[in-house]
Image (tube, rainbow, N blue to C red; front, side, top):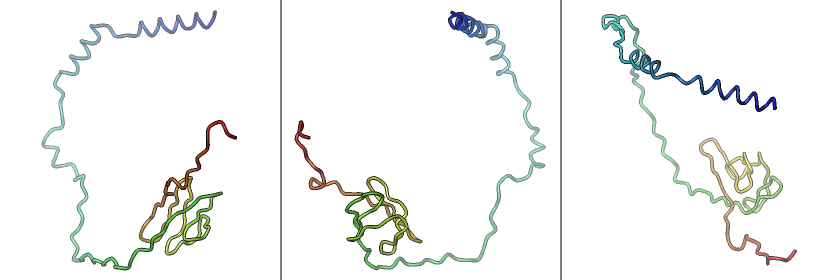
Amino acid sequence: MNQVLAMIIIGATVLSAEPTIEQIETIVEQIHTKRNGLNPALFDQIAEPFVKRKESNQTAKIIPVSEEPREKIALHAILNKKAFIADRWHKEGDMVGKYRLVYIGKSGVVLKNKHEIKRIFLKQTKQSLIMTKEGTK
């Protein structure tokens, strides 16, 4: 009973809080009145907000990417926070070739070295799916 009475009182206060047409018209008039802005003479006194970089005589060095063949890394399985990569089981923190294994998820791993990050996912093939008949245990 007290909850119903409290809801009625709250509802009445919310409904009575709506602005009247006169209040809305007053607000609109205040919006349309001309406002005084900054005097244009004061613009010269304002500090420059943008930072300018100093020109330098240094030139960028272009380092060619080596044409070494990239090693192929394949993820074959994930089990108990271990990943089967390159014919071995690895845990987080292990080195896999030139990469460190930094994360093992449910369907993929993240390998990282100084220059790149690789995300490798399990391949879903028909052979990796186990088919069961309905109704069998």
